[in-house]
Amino acid sequence: MIYDVEKVRNDFPILSREVYGKPLVYLDSAASAQKPKKVIEQIKEFQETDYANVHRGIHFLSNASTDAFESARKKVQKFLNADKQEEIIFTLGATDSINLVANCLGENFFKKDDEIILTVMEHHSNIVPWHFLREKVGVKIKWVDCDNQGNISLNDIKKIVTDKTKFISITQMSNVLGSDLPLKEIIKFSHEKNILVLIDGCQGIAHMQTDVKDLDCDFYVFSGHKLYGPTGVGVLYGKHDILNNLPPWRGGGEMIREVKKESVTFADSPSRFEAGTPNIIQAVGLGAAIDYFHSKVKSGLFDYEKKIAQYFHNEIQAVNKVKVYGEENLSSPMISFTVDGAHPHDIAAIIDREGVAIRAGHHCTQPLMSFFNLNSTARASIGMYTDKNDINLFIKALDKAITFFD
Ligand SMILES: Cc1ncc(COP(=O)(O)O)c(C=O)c1O
Image (tube, rainbow, N blue to C red; front, side):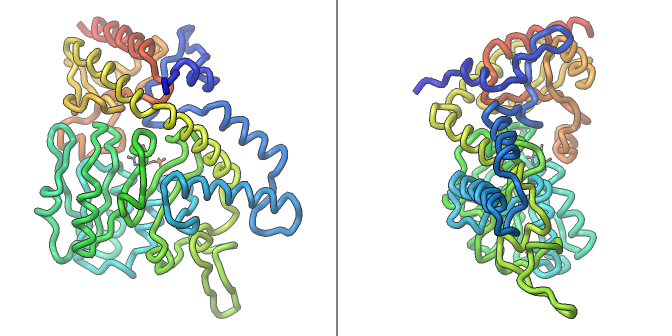
């Protein structure tokens, strides 16, 4: 099947707008992806026809809303190839999911001096919750460096694992370098050592096939808004046995079995971890996004993205004064770069005036910035709607910015 990017672009209303009188070139999908009409319309339609609170009522609408919410959970389950619906917890986003895991494991699982392994490429969302545990419980965080291309091998991990290592929390795809890691090997080795593994799938979910059963990870997290869905919803996948042995984190309605004046018992997963009225509308929107995304995967999205990424890398690496980080990874959907003699923020600001949206800063990865001896980079990232014209307009704008600093 031929992937028809121009047809896909027509599904995204925002792409037809202009900024500063120029056509919008959106190259910031790694920060947040734009939304297709199907998702926008489904969210509207759900609120116009089936919305009510879930799980609580016996009236018609409450049942319709519960069906829509639970059917979104089912879609996530199938999409990730999880065994059971109960393994899918709706959260506010990947950050919330990781905080949930860190808090629920907490002092019940970790003792002082236990070790957690992180890579130097992790997003702050996959660092700070573990720092909280370091401060609270006294766990040690051990770091695995990558090479200059963002690669990490199983050997790098083996070198720092000890008898005290209890947990590895690792990205599926770096949000700066776009590199992906040998996760299956790492997980297999970790399990032989009784180490649990969490995969941060925030970027990987949108660019590669993900199968949690095949990976055999213990936890997997992602955010809906990077998968062309709404903000305010994310997913925590956890193995059923592990989830049901974790205590809850937040308390409130829906997460209990019984509340008495002197005691409380808790519901099983997923309710145990979804206290209060959940993000019903956003979850339904995520379900629609998954349907849409899945249809594009079937029509060759991943191959298309690889080709467009290669085109992008070839074009940008030919520009004078530009240094790309992870330049050997030619199919990376993220391109982080610096320009000799110009601050990344200035580059981003100048090309913004040409209608081109990219990101500049530390990308919530300060340990990785330190590794490269940098404070910031500019980052252009592609999505399912990125075409050659976007890249050509970006290169033209970049040339203009570079000339400005000459
Ligand atoms: C790799 C990675 N992990 C975690 C996050 C945090 O996602 P959110 O802010 O949606 O919770 C991001 C967001 O950029 C990311 O790229």
